[in-house]
Length: 408
Image 1 (cartoon, rainbow, N blue to C red):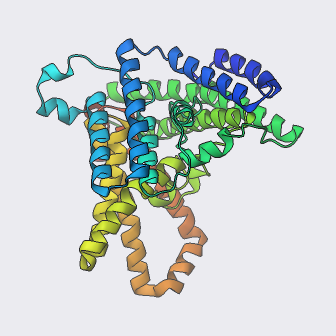
Image 2: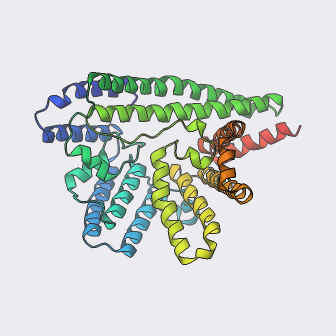
Image 3: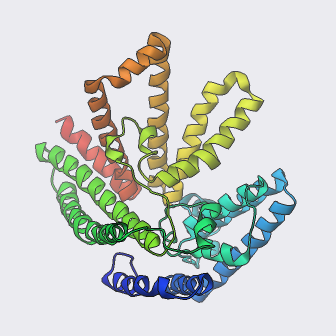
């Protein structure tokens, strides 16, 4: 069941109407947990997936408790590596299928929400190791991991933030106006996903078909930019619409979910974009991949700090790319974003060296430069999505055909 489907919206409207009529917090928690399980079951996972999910959740709870009581950096690192290795196997990444016997990949287990459960589990073990989790119960843990509003595509939320609302589960919208705004946001999210997003995807598919079937010419260039804009619009409407639905829905049931978008298309570089587009993923990459890697490298090799920061950028965004999908095109997508962030940092360093901090400030405040940077960032991001939306062969065919049209 899709959260933008009429069935889901109808069910939600009924539940939200009676949710706070229940007599106490526990009864509301039980209803919420039943809804999460029902939503998970509606995704139709097979029984092996249920067994794997049970093992993942059970082991995660035990290990998090262990790290909270007996923190050990080496064991924490080893456990995270095991989690990532298990995730890599479940997703059957292309490089694994090339390295390991084909018999190991004959059966595939589709575990719904595994990508975001992995993020939440790493959140938990690291925060438990660092002593940031004061109370940790199995009931809270299960509902945190299976929260229907963050199960499929985020936003990514910390356990502590979830529990702050979960243990009270009381209305957080203080007046009628805020309640109506949340319902309006939910319905607008449905329109984004089912209306605007679907229209953009239909148009994108049509333009892509023409682009691939026609000989290279001047129309190829126009169709290429048409694909860029249409797929970027589709992804924005589809994903931001989904976030509107789950954030508004969770607010109406007394849970605050973090915002995931903040006008991403006014970003002036790729680094800025990741603070505006899928913000919770960008923050997760920063906190759990880039920062620990950079901090460790600087402590061990301080004289190479600048160079190692660029290595950390590439590794962080490479991981972000391959997390999105198991094929080689996502590797290219991640590397393009790593290159974009690195280029922005190098340019900033050059400006500081030539003009100093005051000169950098004047540069950033210059309106024409700002608008050029925004337009350039938008097109670079849209270009990278060619490798997000197509397999490697199709992506390369699109790029080669554009090259042929430009050199005619």
